[in-house]
Amino acid sequence: MRRLLPLLLLALPLAAQELPGVPKPRLELADSARRAEPPAAARPSGAPMRDSGVTAVARIARTPFVRNQTLLGIVLYGPSFAATVADRPVPAVAAYLVMAGGSFFAAAELARDLRITEGMELLATRAPILGAATGAAGQYSLTGENDYAAGIFFGSMLGTTAALTLGQRLTTGAAMASVFGAEAVAGLAIGTMYAFDEDYTNTRARAAVGAGAAVAGMQLGAMYGTYSRYNVTAGDVQALWTASLIGATAGGAFVANGHPGHKTSTLALLGGAVTGLVAGDRLLVRPIDHARGEGTLVAAGGLAGALMGGGVAVLVGSSDRFNAVTAALGAAGAIGGVWMVERWMGSRPDAGRRVSTRLTVTPQSLALAASRVPGTHSLVRFTF
Image 1 (cartoon, rainbow, N blue to C red):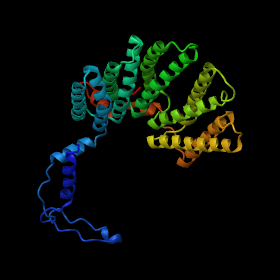
Image 2 (image 1 turned 30 degrees about the horizontal axis):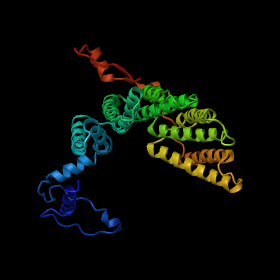
Image 3 (image 1 turned 135 degrees about the horizontal axis):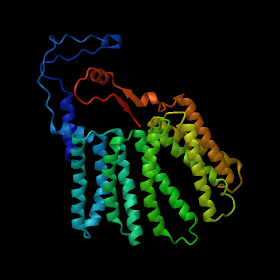
């Protein structure tokens, strides 16, 4: 990429030059700039533009799927592959370069042959990370050793493959929900096992359960985003994360004072997180549709409100800065921040999943069938 930078810098001023024979436009101010274009016959025809190699590389690099896969090749695929196939520095560096460079070419080829939807792009960016964590947990549960580079590599590859295969049938909201389901279910499963592990010895069992829960949670999340009777957008799923964190903070208020054991503390945090999920689904997801930017604003409002609530608790509290009052006021401030952001953004009612939007009747096919035209005609289409 460093060798391409001079070419890019050279191409920019060349691309900005006027074509030969084309008169330079006169500088206009205010409304005089809104002049009509001359007729096509009066415009001089310049030489045809040629697509240079630098322009083609820049266009490919601007594709989100190719860019993200290249970054994953640099930070995930390449290091895990090198650690899997080599145990000496020189072969490891060679393997890393092969995989990191091959990720760019493989992503560019896939982007040329496949229609990469937004849901596929989102899944192909996050599913490899989930797959790497799942593969590492699975390998650790089988071997009990900390060397799980192979699990990371093969898990990330399986995650990418699954994203490109399953993502074709998922909307952006369902794709985001599948990632959320994998993370939430795995976290709940591991946390529950940790709460009841008095001796902290069942690490391999927790890893195995977490890996299985991530796979099952991804399917449950996709079903939640696809088959819910209300519309689930990517921003709605982001709002769910915010609601879950607020619930966990509120649950921490019940165990912040005193010295509760790890079982009580963990179950209180998990119970608060689940309560926050349910409340977020009822109050944020069902009645409102959030865009991805709005989901980020909801998270920012919750964080700002939590900081304000925690700051008030510290100012008026005792020398014990981190206590139940701090957690409770932080959760209350986060709720107020989310409410204020929703109020600023205005009403965006949920689109719903009405039968009228899922049932499609094709009049042309009905006319062809009534005329007894030979062939297969799609009369009615119902989307689940």
